[in-house]
Image (cartoon, rainbow, N blue to C red; front, side):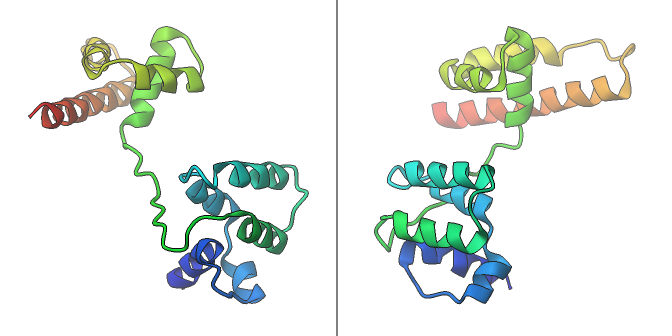
Length: 160
């Protein structure tokens, strides 16, 4: 079952023949577009198909066939999914609140700021008095502290 999903998804790149029944059953347009957008040669085409799908102009089989026809990546190319840092959302939300910016700008700040500055920011918001906090605020501070510990480990491993 899980192999069928990956067979359908990878057939876009390796051009292997897949039946329409398998496409209808296992093709996930959003996941496939996200996966394909990880390669520079497929990014534009994947985003174009994503826009058409978002506007409800394209069916499942048509989307599959369009992606298969448009994507011109060598057959042996390995495309990996992004492994998202589980603390990334916490850090991005903290940057959004601290600098009063949107998500895209916060992600830019995250990429621009040196790791030491992000750690200072995490330390600043992770050291709050816990006596007067609600359960939601306590969870938020705990998430910030976990992100701080993780970020310090990452920076130490890079410096070692």
